[in-house]
Image (cartoon, rainbow, N blue to C red):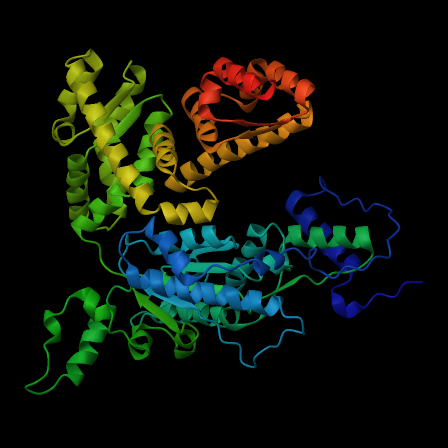
Amino acid sequence: MTYHNDATGPDPKKIEKELGEFLNKRFGGNVKILTPSIQPQQETTTGTTPESGKKKLIDFNIKPSELISYLDQYVIRQDLAKSVLATKICTHFNRIRHQETMITEPFKITGNIKSNILLLGPTGIGKTYLIKLIAKKIGVPFVKADATKFSETGYVGGDVEDLIRDLVKEAKDDIELAECGIIYIDEVDKIAASPNVAGSQISRTGVQRALLKPMEETDVDLKVPHDPVSMMQELEAFQRTGKRSARRVNTANILFILSGAFSGLTDIVKKRLSKQAIGFGASLTHTRKENELLKETRSEDLVAYGFESEFIGRVPVRCVLDELTQKDLYDILKMPNNPVILSKRLDFKSYGIDIVFTDEALEALAERAYKENTGARGLVSVVEQAMLCFEEKLPSESVQQFAITKQMLTDPEQTLSDLIQGNDKEKYAAEYNHALVLFSNYISEYVKKNWKIFSIRYGLTLTQIRTKMVVQYYTTHVMEIEDAVKQVKKFYDDVKEMELEISKNYDLNVVFEEDAADFLIQQFIEYNATADEVLSKIYTDFFDGFNLIREKTGKARFFLSKKALTDHEDYLNELIRKEIK
């Protein structure tokens, strides 16, 4: 006889009954539950997935400076935000790793303090982009939500807990990994209580209070009483194992990052500073810029803005992001990993059309975007607006490549007509080739500047010729720089794999010298050669000669240089004369 502890969860028969009533009410008599007659197995269900989650964090060893250098490849300026985010996030996860690797039982400090972060700044300056980059880099589950959806639900705090459940889904049902995830809540300023509307104020305060416990530490039940799917999963688990499971997520190590534009907060800061600044030596606050005032924000200002003091106390780390200038917008467009230009290149590449932007065109686009006054988001709209007519018409024509110049942006109708009718072909071809050379040179300088970072990160020494390969692969394909470096590294690994393949199949120890490896990588990039094709040619060119030397001398180790690969007959003749005397 098996005894079940009723304290672990509700009666499965009750669940089945409630689920049946729900289905009957929703679908009438058309849907029924068929309970399979399965003998419950006697294994124990702990309610957690196999131990795999935190093991990923045991290898976490990223330092703040490393994460900052990674962010520098994607984000212009925002040095303070990069510093704050990289430092606090690296410390948070390194502390988790430290405790997980302790030989003794991990200690727990009474009164757990988490470095939850609040980002303040106007829209379009890269708040969300920064968090997404960090989550991608460190490889932890990441959930983003807008605070506005919570304010619409009134007093219901269950939606807040849904963030934790979404984190488990992002972790592919790995609870331990989800317990070390990141939750990013944007537009958090929208849940600040409004002093003018009583109902809205109570609703938004309720959302703040619902966030208090998850932001500190609490256990969130993955089972939702009103969700038939979760009820069905629990019933299925009981029928499979004979045990009722209590699946809960502890939020002690889940990092919360909040952000918002906080429109109107500067008025509160200015008012406070004006009260303090009395006398002849006082500085005039009305002459200070909005961003400078935002940097003077204190907890009392956020409370006056409409946040409860308990809520603000759970976000100890605060950072104000810089507003973007027109030059910043130009620098964003110039960055190799900039998603705006990469996305537009991909749009045209999908039609078999290669495009390249000139510096003058990027400057003109940055000027237009700056007038939009929406930060980096304005770049997307101006690029789309400028390129729409070309994207509509050119896929139906024979145009395969063209450069986006300032003249083209000024008079798009004339340029489009010329491209379609084939007018001034030499002129447009020269513009494209010139722009491509300048673009390639810029990417080359960028890779050279960061070669040490790339070499260490991917275990591939970026020599001058390999830098050229990275540039060539990046400019002919649409991808981020790091992906181009990774692809060249993969080609290098393929060459080393070929050495093992030769040894395994032909019992020969063939070593490709570095210049030979680079030559083979070039074949992969320029001619789309495959490893099988290269191996077949090497067998045809060298096997008989190597086999002859092995039979006569017993030697089975051979070094192949680039010269040997390009002139195998001369190489083999010289080798045979040397080895067989």
